[in-house]
Length: 361
Length: 279
Image (cartoon, rainbow over all chains, first blue to last red):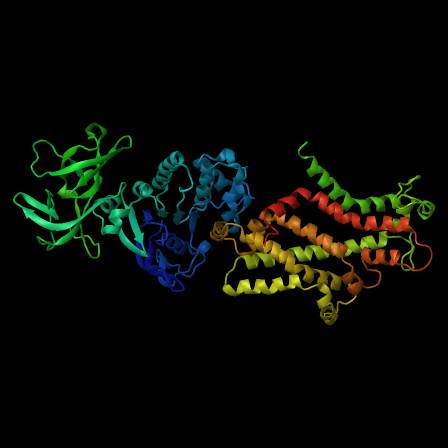
């Protein structure tokens, strides 16, 4: 197990800056997830850690070792690709043993290690097949097996589940998590799927436009997004944003939206927020709910449509001239056209700066 | 029945292509008398393989009367090493160019491609000088060298375009697994390119086997390929022309290329389909 330390990593192709000043530390045994939309530079960063691409600035350390100028095979890493990248002409057995063969291990040693990993992943019966004779899920297992056989210090995964169908993806998610808990290898995992990020990560790094937007535990990233980008990217359906002015009612803080006043009980305004200041209020769908009969600070809404998803019901509601999404349980279901009293959870609300989108509270 | 016109067209086309071959075959099976007194298109009255055996083992060419068999062996001695060299060198060059490690690599490839569009007759003289300076003129090595050089542009094009279609992730995976330039080529890329190898093999075999001008120019005495011998045999100005022997000899000379094509047929078609010869 190794600590991976990235220091001021930058990468540009010609005039295009792909990565700017990335500073990250992956603790030994940690499962760090790089999350971001396509084109945010996360795969480039992974390739740089792997040694497949050279950074234009910055240094990479594995433990005390500076690996910036080392070839991938000298870094003691293994990588799983989205496309699996199994060698089509080799059997599963040879695919898994290829790296060991290149290291010059004896045939007996290779056979023993491949057999061990094949047993762990339950792919022993596939060992003599070619990749083309395997299903997508089986290919994925083999690709993971090929990486595990090397017993790498650092495990790199580039969207490994993106090519699987939904059911299989859920199964492999559980399996990958179990594998990591068993081996506790330092892992760097790239994905654009926030469910995967939430499932695995000890910490999530949210990236956009070549920069780290936030790096924290999944629950913190979800509950206290560092800026509007993170708030909008993490969570589905996405967070509701309402732009208005902070106000103070007799019974607590509120947001003024034109002529409407939305009470936000429990909003703790810190760090010099002032009444009258323009802010963007961020509320997750589960923080907008139907008010109970005895609630005082409520606001009127108008149900536009409902979206049942099984366990949850998403309700589009017109609130103070804007549409917001609320998450309710199917039993609560108001019908479209109905007028409802809403309660906003001020304790869970996020406030962002109007200009730069940074978190204010 | 709606397909009848289609089959009719195809049959006519096939007949047009095969007709000369049929005439050759029928003529080669006739005795000389029958040729001299009958129609060229008439089928043999009294088929005999005498012309074939003479063409193979008895016809006199350049003073030796041992037929084509000697020259046939010469051709193989030229084709096999030339084939191996041009394929090995072309595949490796194509692989190196397909990596496109720098911008000028594509320009290098473009320069190589120019070689495709220059007929060998144009560069024949400089090539002779080059081979002479290398001290290889009139040797088997010189001829093999000439064939390798002339085939290089084409074979490289085939392999480079195929390797370019191989997913980049495969190369990355090989690099992470610790395979260097040559190991990746040998273990990953070359096995993938088997259908392309078949295409290159068939086309290069055909080209080198059928070559006349390089064989005539570069081969030393007694090393000339079967095409040169065939020209001597059929082009002889003296004595009576033995058409049946000439026809048989021509067919013998053409046989290997047909066999190579038929034997590698399925792989060849797969290679063409795999985009081996797409621009």
